[in-house]
Image 1 (cartoon, protein in one colour):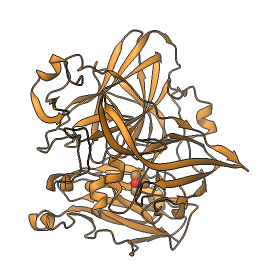
Image 2 (cartoon, helix red, strand yellow):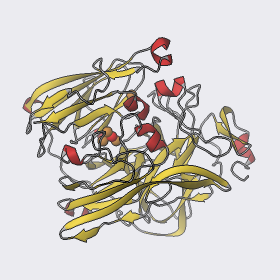
Image 3 (tube, helix red, strand yellow):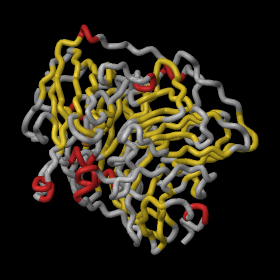
Image 4 (cartoon, helix red, strand yellow):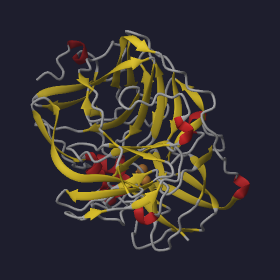
Length: 496
Ligand code: C2O
Ligand code: CU
Ligand code: CU
């Protein structure tokens, strides 16, 4: 077993331990001051699916299926994926084009596929109301009415989302438009424009990653002991350009990542959930909550090796990647090996895009959402829900909010619980007005569909409901810690 043979990996202070294939797997407690722990698997790049044209419609065939994945040599892990055994292809779509997704279910159980971040009619959304039964094919069709962005897709079956995503069903969607076509950004897929799906999974001694909730993971969300990027353990990427664009998706069930380079250098964020920022933002630390995306540009020097790490960040309290004792741990996410000769890339331009900012004065309504956690063993052990929004857990037969088409609204998210909750809403890309009355950080000043709401925080977001109304088909809003969502920390709104 060759996973953790490097001595320097084992000698560091131990924060948590798991056992895989009879070999103890240790996470070092403190950061990665030591060069690295040995990253030895080439980063897998999900295949790019362009779709095929059928009388003016781009058609994508997606099959949800079970399979076996060998994350570790010699260990056969039962997993699920889309068109493969783990994760799914990256779907490339263009603004203005009409797409049809043929979603076939070969899982042996019902599921759904939801297009996270997409502005579309509710019936095409793939949420809990669009169940695809085993053996069936569901074919939603819609027109891409939004700017270039890195979105994603994942199952969204009521009560089963966490388990289905955990088993491996997720993929990225890259929307392109003429604006980004004209920008000198790295855009060669898998070469200088690389998707990076970050996930952590709990693997057992025999290499299985069964989804089993303890009382702790039911409350805090399911956190793993093994980090993966694109389903690759201990990944490295061989870069050939002076700038590497990483489209990072936090595809974890519950963990928040705090990303930094091991050399302390800054990197540039050019896009957030819903697309490009107006200008690039230079960062040394990026917090990425579950379901959030960030497009980063990393500067490389020929012959150099840099590591993107998850660092512990006590300050935010959101650096989860925790064991059952909830110790936040640090670990390398991706080792970037720059070739001895690099092709020069252009720097990201100062003006990336322009965003139409919604004005507070144009909002016709403010809705309040209290994000709550009820403590108490009685509720937990009886299998009751401990997380709720405005005192309610999801009732799929009940519409919580009714919104008028064309309206601009403010949603005020109040976290009155003791842990952070990443709030997500369907249909729209919103803008963050303020956090506890203060304007958002520059890298959150863009189109968002997930926002971390920290304990005790009040976050105000503003959004406009356009194009699609349907009194009978709701959109969802929820906490994107998938265990919270499954437990009913979710509501639904209709646009009429
Ligand atoms: Cu990423 Cu309601 O989902
Ligand atoms: Cu979504
Ligand atoms: Cu939550």
